[in-house]
Every structure is written in C-alpha cells, then in structure tokens.
Amino acid sequence: MANKLISEIPLPKSIANVFAARNISTAKDALSLTEFELMELLDVGLTEVRSALSQISEIIAPPYQTALSLMEQRFQNEHLGGHFPTGLKGLDATLCGGIPFGVLTELVGPAGIGKTQFCLKLSLLASLPANYGGLDGRVIYFDVESKFSSTRLLEMGLRSFPEIFQMKEMAQEMAGRILVLRPTSLSEFTQHLQQIKVSLLQNQVKMLVIDSMTALVSGEHEQGSHKQQTLSWHISFIKSLAELSRIPVVVTNQVRSHNQNEAPHYSFQVQSRDATIETPSRYGSHLVAALGIHWAHAVTTRLVLEAKSGQRFIKVAKSPISPPLAFPFHISSLGILLLSDEGMELMGPEINSIHCQGHNEIINFGMESLD
Image (cartoon, rainbow, N blue to C red; front, side, top):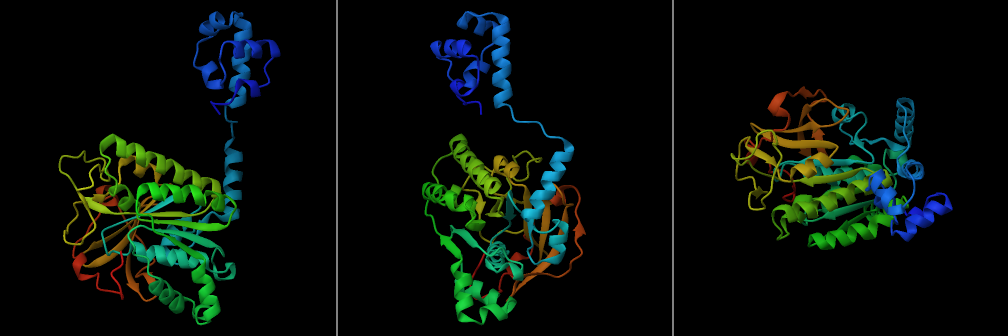
C-alpha cells in the first residue's frame, strides 16, 4: 500500500496537482518527508500539508480489528478448513485438528527417520474424496531429492483404504491427483512456484509439499548474506501462497551437526552447506535443523522426527496453539503409526533438541530407502 499512487488517492485537485508537479508520485514519497519539508517543497501551508498527510495515511493504513472480529474471523476460517487431520489421533488432538491451513508446517529430522513417509501419507490423504476425510483435490509435490515412491504411495493406499485402491480406476484417479515436480535448481523451483500460483489461487490445488527445501538451498553456490537474501524471497513467497490459497503447506528440513561456536539460544541456526548432513552415520543429540533463523521464524508449526535409544519419536517443537509433546511412532505398511496417543510433555532444551541415538538400528523398514 505504501506504493499506492497519489493520483489514486482522493485528494483535493489543487493539492494533488502540486504533488504531481513536484514528482511526489506515491504515498511512500509523501510520508517519507516531514511536514516542514513538504511545506517548503510544495509551497503550501501547514494546514494543507497535515490534511493531505491525514488522507494519505487513512487510505494506505490497514483497517483496525477488534478482538471480537478476530475471533469471528478465526471461527470462520476454521469452518472453511482450519486443520487437516493426519490420521494420527494423538498428534491431531495436540494440533487442535491436524496440519493447519494457510501457514507453513515443517518436518525436520535426520535421514531415514520418516519425513518423506509422512509427506507421502499426507499427500495420499489429501487426494481422497471428502467422505473419506480427504480434501478431494490435487496435491503439488516438489520431490527435490527424487525420493517420491509411487509404489510406496499405492501400498499405503491399498492397506489404508482397500475399498478405494482395490479398484484400478479409483486408484489411478487418486494417484493422478498428486502432481510430482523435480526441480534441479533453486531457479527452476522458483519458476515452478510462479507457474503454480494461479492454480493455487483458483482453488485447484489442496496441498503443497516441498521435500526438501534444504536440498534446494544447499545446491546453490551463493554464500552468507546472498544466500539468506535468496532464501528470504522464497520464504515470503511460499508464506504468501499458503495465506492466499488457504491450504496446508508442508516443508521438510534436514539436519546438520551443531557447531560449538554457535550461539546456544538459536539451536536451529545454520549458514554453511558443508555442515549439512543427510546420512545416519553420526549419532547423538548434537543435531540442529539445517535452515537459518529467518526460516525458523517463518514456520508456524515445527514437527521434529527423531530417534532415542532405537525408538522413533515425533514431537511438536513449535506451535502457537499446542503444548510441546512427543509421541513414539513406528512405520508400517500403512505409513507412520503412533505407538501411543498420549504425548510426553517436553521442557527446556529438550523441546528444540534433535536426537539420533541408535538411528542406524531402526531404518531397515520398507522396500526402498526413504527419508
């Protein structure tokens, strides 16, 4: 709104003509000057300047909202689709219904822990008809590391919804709703995002999955502030897609070893590609999420998938509406299943820590090596 043209604001014609004559063409141009600077530049009195600034500010300022209107808006948004159930009862209850619409949900964890398995199951569920709890629409799946497995997807569907997937035509229709894109660079990914924006806004797509964002950023040769600027643009664009289309957006994030020289209060901060790991060869709790602090702030919900003493856990590490809880899980032919719907409460550093203890002993499930 700051770039709104002065000519589009209903100012008195006399003062509007003066703004135009002095090359003050946008609201930002006018509001960047003090009252006395404008008096001198426009050669008008203080009363006229204050009146013009008041009108400009009123036009470009966002309208205020009361607590009541915000509450009513939230109820309306939830009625239209506030959360998408994951099928994991305990996790859905903790998240007040499941994966939230209109914001970014992040899955972070070491390789082989189950991030891609989770993404596959969410994509499958979203493609289902509404009477089966699905979103009855298309899913766009960015498969950056070529880990998407249609065989595994159909296996999950057949075991979870045999009444649908035993019929060849229905199985083909459900699988055909998941559109898989495999960008080889960040620039190609950017082009894809811009191309699918129209489909998202026209309500043709019901879920967006990016697996993984880390691999895209790590593939670029830019360093330091340039890489952060590039990531910042994508953060803003992806967030705007989520907010405008009101769909669940799920993004996976890898992990890396923790640098002892880093500030301890940012346990998820990273700047270097070389430190990023996607191999279960290192164990212990000195692991952190592999995207930087700007990314961490952009994510509304962070789910950490980790392993301790040979047992997998999924924990709610960040959520504006949910407490930090951890749920033990395993992976079966149906996908991810919770071993208990009762979450274990987390406190202090345990909330953001990422464990990979005994992880090499528990990644033997499945036909393929999936993340």
